[in-house]
Image 1: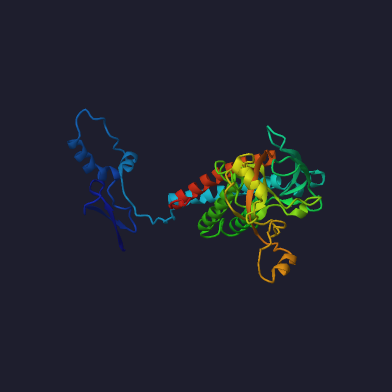
Image 2: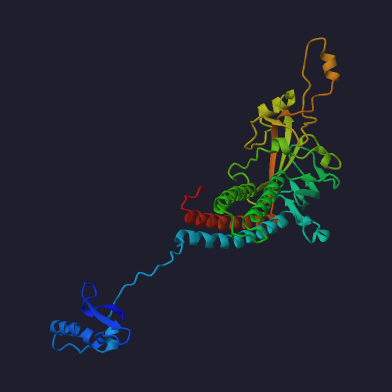
Length: 403
């Protein structure tokens, strides 16, 4: 007959080497001390240490079991913990997708303000008819019609002091292109294309294994930086040159060609349309060749004071001038020569390239365009919203924003 040995730790000395040993035989009940006997040393030791007024403790079997505090080293699975910055970045990238789609829609609306002829109502669009008139004089009176980035038609009556009265009629078959608006259209197109590429790469329509491609935050930061620069350039074009200077140097090379008018424009007039403070501005200048000799009668009149040159900020300057087609017809003086080739030079047509000219008279006429004013306000709002988005992304990425 074999014996079985059972070893049980005493409750009072869980961390000591005290054990209660009991023997069990195959034919008899186990000879083990009862739970009450095992708990007696613990009860005696606890009674000596506690105060007399302490509440009695439960020394029953169930109560003693509740008092046991045994740490059992269960194996725990180490779950991957996501750093707070990574969680913020993941959330921001998810929200950024909706923001970029809203920005894309707003840019398309801005493009519709500039080019309504390409919108859904293009068939009924007849352009914006704008009044072109000097406020206190009869020097300039008329109207023009802007369609997109061009002046499609218009009639303007001029009464300049240095030139005879005349009427300018824009040929509808040869509309005048407004150079700053042409540059603005290119910027808006590129901005919309940039957003299309960004959304297609960072937020594809077809779901993938990962919610966003790896390192997409760096790609988005670079794309948004380029987009912010494009919007800033667009706002600068609408703002135009400062009002204090009142001069747009592009007039010397982008004035309207003579062929845009019917009958053709006189060579001595520069007709230039630009932008300033989100308004269309017409600059009219009466020109004369810088090398043209002054006749004797004009010299006497200027000396006696009976004739005076019109004073303005460009009166004493010499400009190299040509129209948008690169020609300056009628503003060249034939070169004088005492050689035998003088007759040949006189019969040769003058060079039609750029010419050196004086500005005898200068007029500036503003024409407020409601679409351009609305476009400027929208672009400013989009720039501010984009700047805040870039700041949030840079803060989560732990980088400094390069404005």
